[in-house]
Length: 398
Image 1 (spheres, helix red, strand yellow):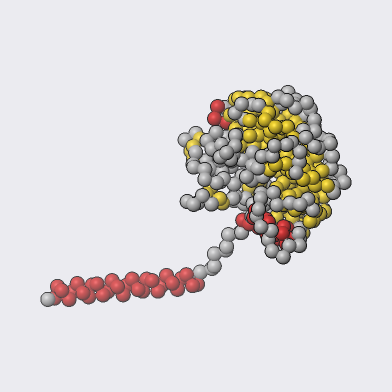
Image 2 (cartoon, rainbow, N blue to C red; image 1 turned 45 degrees about the horizontal axis):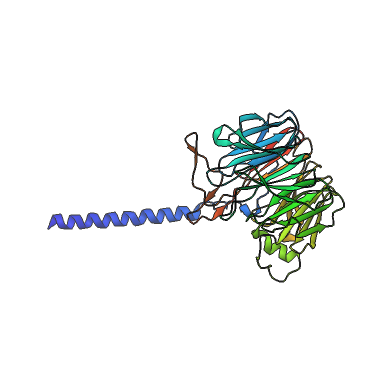
């Protein structure tokens, strides 16, 4: 009997002790300083100091491009080389003698597990490089008759081929089959140098900008080669352009004066253009300019939409990065001055990856972006800039 009551008393004592410890922990938590909330990535603007400054080029850096999976960043230069960097470690991994004249643009793309690097140059060529084989040159695409200044992979669609688009001073845009190297379509309509071309998120549309002071929208699936829309209003060459992501449509709809958000009927509802007239213009899918953003003191050379949808980042010859809040009528909400010692030529955001499994490089898992178990993308706040000062800079939130 004594043993039985002894065990009951021990059990009761242990219960009282646990309750006292719980009360003590709750009291400590109440007295503790509140933990600061993590900054909202949807409102991220980079700090003045970059995460990394990458130096190796011997002439102007004209372009930068992130690998969609690994922590790889490529840069192209007037020194005719492509440099391959690990942007997380700040290490130069490889230097490629790529072209016989300046490298004008770069892009990573292609189907899952078969990502390639594309480059274009003033030497009239577009080249494809295989990162899994030491960046060997696997194909050269010839056909342009003047400098090629823009190259972009089209997002892969189940019903389409692996396609690449290039833009040139010969006033044409060419669409290439990456697997065969054949030009499958030539788009005509610009009256001067086509400076830049980019695809919509679903790969159906192209947006191009030109020295003829216009931007044009093209339907890749259309049988003809004519543009479906021309955006006119800039007073000088249009250097760059971008499709607005769906996350920005509610803000742009409000800016356009719509009482409610424009229904998402296609991937070409809103656009942005940057020009040598020092302005950025925002457009709706009918070709109407809904806002003009002023403030840059030089040519606007590059712009990207924040994946969160509220802001546009722009880079210009005035050596600044500017951040425009389209949720506040396009107000400039931040300026980074003196980002580079020379004109800023390029600006890219780390791609958002959807449904890509972890891949290994050198035995390590190196994912540049991540998705949850349902395949919902979570973007990372990382941008890279290139400049005539021969430097590449990486800005990151972490």
